[in-house]
Amino acid sequence: MFRGSTISVILPTFNEKDSIRKVIEDFDHLGIVEEIIVINNNAAEGTSEEVAQTKAIEIIEPDQGYGSAIQRGFREAKGDLLVVCEPDDTFLAKDIYKFLAYVDDLDIIYGTRTTKNLIWEKANMGFLLRWGNWAVAKLLEILFNTNYLSDVGCTYRLVKREVVQNMLPYFKVKSNFFGPEMMVLGFKMGYKCVQIPVNYKERVGISSVTGDIRKAIVLGIQMIFLILFMRLDFRKKSIY
Image (cartoon, rainbow, N blue to C red):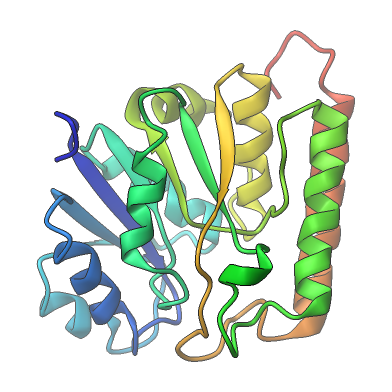
């Protein structure tokens, strides 16, 4: 619990069998998280066995896609503050305190992995990924007149429960470019949002997306088209 608010951590998993147990334990050892939910999105064989050795709750989400997994986690989580993180050990559990420092004043806090001094050796944030994320973030920032943004792909974020309950009916993206959809919706719905730098480490195992540069480029293009589409819809009375 943090200042009277309960915390739920949501970990969507697909190919993180070798790291998920450590990530769960890292969050649990902080002593402030009431609930850790693992959304098993057709995950690698052996993932459930690793989760079973921890205090985490495992929920099976058969509808494939990062967006599907996160939205299921949002629906299942019971905490006042909902934290989303990758269970691939690229993030530090203790960075949750950075997010919590803003909860009194803001509704959604996003992480950014593009701060050079916080990118660890061997982290998968080379020139193309770093500047690609920065460029797409700047497109979003300019088109929607937001505060400073430097990353659209960071999955480490915190959102208040009542905020995400209002956003849930408007989510449409079920795949890997759900992240920027959530960011745009948050700004369009008038919520107070900020992006803060977090540590970014070497991944355990191979990413199903950023481990392949071609897939990463395709994902970036999909994000751009999504942002442009949502901007064209901006003047309509509907949220999206």
